[in-house]
Amino acid sequence: MTSGSTGFWDRYVVYSFAQVIKWLSLGGNRGVGIILFTLIIRVILFPLMNFQTKSMRKTQDLQPKITALQEKYSSKDTETQQKLKEEQQKLYQEHGVNPYAGCLPLLVQMPILMAVYQAISRVPELRAGSFLWVHVLGEPDPYYILPVLAGIFTFLSTYLSSMSQVNSNSSVKIMNYVMPVMILVMAINLPGALSLYWVISNAFQVGQTLLINNPFKIRRERQEAERQARQRERELEKAKNPNKKQRHKKRK
Image (cartoon, rainbow, N blue to C red; front, side):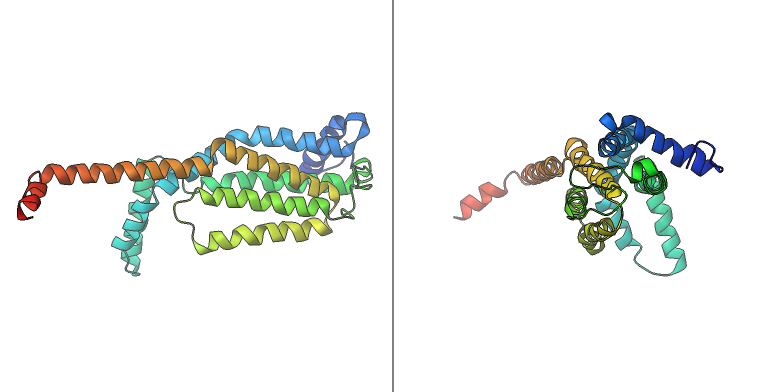
């Protein structure tokens, strides 16, 4: 893998990534280079991730209305289902929600992950680098520390994201556990450098979630909104029946 490599992917993506990682390798430490490179990538992607988070939150806030539409158009015939799609699309447009926004960051991150993997696998200087207990970054972590950390941070990331959802369906709950296991198994067999990338990337994601989409804060806000809604309902009920309580007292 050199500057003379042919093909857009090899020459301008993989080779460029490798050069940036080497340039960021303070004191020749490739592990430090991968960490700094990962942090830079995550900072660059932050606006996109923030957009995704806001869009997903709007979608979750619309979930009760979407559920109501699904109940209204519960018939499985083609005409009814088409009407349901039209009503859902209208609802999304009214509230400025793009239901496919959640896929965009994944589509961007996958090529980056592939480029990092190829840079590590095909560039000798990166493949032979070391970081702490991982003496050869081009080989799997011999002590499984990085794979375990990658699995833990993946779980925390997915779990915190699901906590902010109004109603987590069973498939989401299953993925909260399946995804970390998949990452763990893959990280055990892939180069330690890629495991390091996963650890830093998912740790950053955990911090980002707590910063811009804190599920604990969102839950408190929703509980407070529900409390205020119940309070308004009680006040309206009292306003509609001002003498109800007095009549009840007279009967006693």
